[in-house]
Structure formats: structure tokens, C-alpha cells
Length: 300
Ligand SMILES: Nc1nc2c(ncn2[C@@H]2O[C@H](COP(=O)(O)OP(=O)(O)OP(=O)(O)O)[C@@H](O)[C@H]2O)c(=O)[nH]1
Ligand SMILES: [Mg+2]
Picture 1: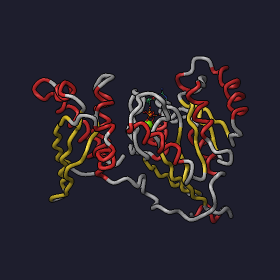
Picture 2: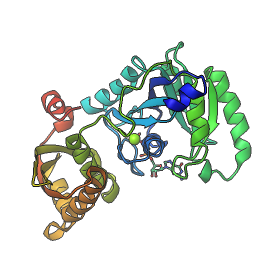
Picture 3: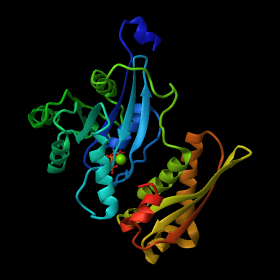
Picture 4: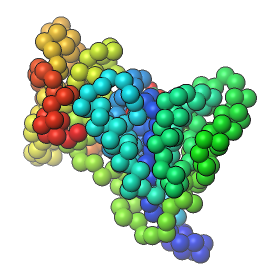
């Protein structure tokens, strides 16, 4: 804040939704923008299911980024409807939107997301994964098409993973934010609590370590979370739809579940900054993704 004042410019602060079709790198972008793992990522589409906040504070601005689930039309269930609702609602209470699109490849699902943008919203397009592009000549025609679809304030090719041009993206978003004091502390990187993050880290390992079916049939609930003598003691339950999915998840002699829990615990200890004792159970709960009461209890 001192720097902004010294330069004669007012401090800016605002909410910025990150939207896009599944798997374009929205959560990876959020994590690299804020410099910590607050939103889970995987190679699989529809990894993110909740609204996840990540906060970046610079000398001249505070950005409250809101990661959202990939907007999609497949896998119809009440859970999917709730996920799409999160995306639509995200436009209502933000000052700017970052639409993430794969560099060099605009598809109909991207156009569907752009069509959701309210005409008055201020938006920047981030063309992500430029590091994977073989032919950079594709960028100019892609930018021309996007500019014709929506009056983007800027279109910025970036690589979230390699942290390329993220400063340009942040600069393009900063000018869209209103003047105002910061609402979070300088060191805060999320407003999500440890309980939520613990459940998400377990879900991430399931998305990363299992095949195409089980992750989508899975959710995680935290049964208890306490701190005793500086050790976080967490008891979690993983819910699956069917017995055979439970067997796959547990693995021979419990080996797969042990691997999932070990990796999730390492992430928790890194972010929480202290030792974690983690106990994970697996239960069959048929139809959880269409059960309104259960979805609400699980925070969807
Ligand atoms: N090469 C490369 N890979 C990236 C980049 N950004 C993200 N990825 C990868 O793309 C995959 C999807 O990333 P996520 O961040 O989970 O994507 P998402 O848009 O949040 O996906 P959903 O939450 O499922 O909608 C992961 O395997 C990331 O490692 C990038 O800049 N370059
Ligand atoms: Mg995501």
C-alpha cells in the first residue's frame, strides 16, 4: 500500500472469477498466481467442484481470485447442476472475469462459456498452455476470433504451469479493479478453511491415482478435525457409489488407500505448516451425487 501511495496511485481491490471449460488449467493458474496450492488439479476434466478463493496481494492491488468448476454438459447429475450453478453465480459478485482457453484451440465448449458472460462484465481472456503450442502462428487468428466473440479488455497468452506472462495477465486484470483498501491480510492466500482443504487434497489424490471411473463416483467428508499438542488429527470418509469401486479404491491389502492418504497428508503438512495424523475410511453411499440432502451436507 505504501508503494501505491508513493507513486500517487490509489490501491485497488476486487474479486476476479476464473472460468472456462473443464481441464484448461484454471486451478493451476490460480495456484501459480497466489503462490500456493489452494485449489486441486489433475489431468482429468471436472476436478474442481467448488468455488475456491485464492488471494494475491501486490504493492498496488489485492486480487481475490475465485476458481470455479469447469463449465460442462456431460455427466448429468444434481452435482453437475450445482457445479454449473457455481459458474453462473460467479459473474454476479465479481469485478472482473478471466476466461481461460487453451492456446491455439478454441472449441465449442469455450464459445459456450463466453456466451454465458453478461454483456457488461469486464473480462480478460487467458490463452493457457502456450508451452505446449507447436505452432505459435495459431495465436493471432485465435485472438481475432475471440475479440469478435466478446469485447475482451485484453487477450494474454500464458503458461500457468511454467509461470510465463502471468505478470502481464495480472497487469491486465489490475486496471479492471475498483479502487479500495485490501479486504484480506498481506499473507492470506485463501479464505477456505483447513477442513475444506483437507478433504480436497484427499480428493485430488483420488483424481490423480485412479482411472476414469472411480474419481467421478467419489466424494470426501471430514468426520472430525482437531488439534492436540500441535498435531492436527483428521478423520475423513471417502464415499463411493458401489462395492467394486470401494475395492478398487482400497486396493490389495489397503495399499492404494494408504498411498492416497500418505500423499494427501504431505500436502496438508506443507500448507498447514505442522504435523498431521490422518485416518481415512471408505464407505459405499449409493446415489450420493443425486442426493440433495447429502450434497448440501458435503458443502456442494
Ligand atoms: N503444459 C501445461 N499444462 C498445464 C498448464 N496449466 C495447466 N496444465 C495441466 O492441465 C491439466 C488440468 O489442469 P487444472 O488446473 O486441473 O484444470 P482446470 O481447468 O482447473 O480443470 P477442472 O477443474 O477440471 O475444470 C493438469 O494436468 C495441469 O497440470 C500449462 O500452462 N502448461
Ligand atoms: Mg479446476
